[in-house]
Image (tube, rainbow, N blue to C red; front, side, top):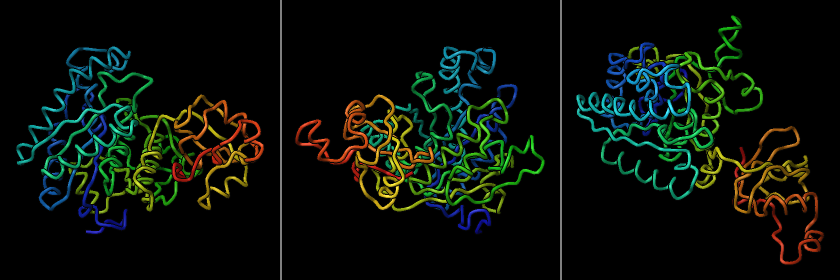
Length: 376
C-alpha cells in the first residue's frame, strides 16, 4: 500500500532504520512494555520476510537499569548514575530484543557506539562495514549509544541523531523515529490548540526549525523535537527520508503503511559519501562568517576564498571541521579548513596576492576547498 503520508510504499523500502524512544519501550514503573514490543517485532518479522532490511536503534537502557538499581530520577540524577544504570540496563534491553526476535526466527546483533565512533572517519567506515555484513547475513542489528562510557562532552545525547547517523553509515533509504509525539506541529500542541501537523517537509529552513520544541513529551527520554529536526538534517542530507511517527499503535509500522499521520522529511540527493559524512558530523571546531557575494559563489559550487570572509570564530587546526555561516546568521555549509584559526583570522577578507605577501609563497588559494565542503 502506498502511504499518503510519504508518497512511497514504506513497506517496500529496501533498508530502514527504526528508532524507538524510551517512553514507548519502558513503562512508567521502569519495566519493558513487552506486549507492545512484540507488536513491533511482528512488524519487523513481516518486513524481513518480504525482503526488507531493518536496523533498530533502541533507547531504554538507562530507564531499565535505574529501576533495577533503585536509582532516583530515572537514573539521570548524575552522570555516574546514568553510566551505572546504562551498564545494567543494556543487558536487560538486549536480552528482550534477542529473545523476542529469536521467537520469530531472527538473529539479533548488539552494537554499542559512541559519538567518536561515527565522528572519526576510519571508525565510521568500520561501523558501516559491520552493518553491511550483518544485514547481508539477515541479522537485525540493535543499536544504542554506549552510555556507560559516554560523557556530557562526548555523546550524541539522544537516539534521534544517532539513528540518523546510523542511517547514513548504513546507506539506508529511510529512517523512522517512533516516538510519543506524532510529528512536527506548527507550534507546541500542548500549549497552542490551533497548532497543525506538518505532513511533509521538502527543505529544513529557519521557519521549520522555529517550530521545534526542545522538551521531551514524557520526561523519560532525552530527545525533543529539536533533536528530531537535527536528525532530519543529517538523514535527508545523506539521501534518506526521515519520518516522525507516533509509536502508540500496537503495530506502528503497519499503521504507517496504512497511512498513519506523521511528518516526512524528504531526502536530498546527489551528495557523495564523504560529503554526507561531513554534513552529519556533530563536533564542529569553528565558524567562518561570510558575505553575500561569497554565499552566492558557494551556491554555484565554488570554493570559499578568504576574500569573502568577514569573521572567524573558534579554535581549529587545518583539517578540522568548521561551519560556514551566511550573512543571515544561518549555517549554509560545512567543510574542512585549509588554514588554522590564527591564519584564517589574519587573511580574512584578503585577496590572494595580499595573502602571499603576508604569509609568503606558496599559499593555498581557498580557505575551504569545494571538494572538502558540503552545503547544508
